[in-house]
Length: 120
Length: 110
Image (cartoon, rainbow over all chains, first blue to last red; front, side, top):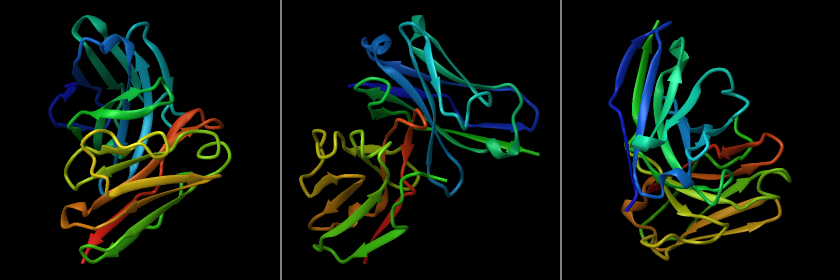
């Protein structure tokens, strides 16, 4: 079965940089889009964007374009979500998920989530 | 602010049937397949329904869904205590060029 394992919880200060990871245990890794979803405390799900590991083609939600960077290292089957300067409003749980059916498809396997806490 | 609107909460007694609506527009539900996700508190979401009405293997047939025009709905028949969770509809939005989630509905089993 496909598994997505995310890096552990992070506690940061506003203005700091951060990169979190999502390792995918599947031989098919390069040929499925990997997406990122945010959930702020007590709130709903928000789609940040996704990346195609085989060629690093990346799509961002207009709401998050320029706010985060999505990248991938195909050789170690790992996708990343990066901030250059965190804000308190970035606090939340971030999930990675595999997209089935192309870049517009549904999210069939999910990571366990990474809690990011940013203090001001 | 989500472009897919769901009722904040629905409730029912064990064994009852409950439905959750998801209202969108031509650029999202009206043009693309709808999905439904279940999120038990403290855990990651899981896909309950994809491609409007298809259940992944392992999802009980108590869960069913449909789509009509710019709206979708999820039905839970024979409600069970383990169905207490948050439910989200989702789909691709051609105008926003992104995947959008509904506002979420909390299901409570009384």
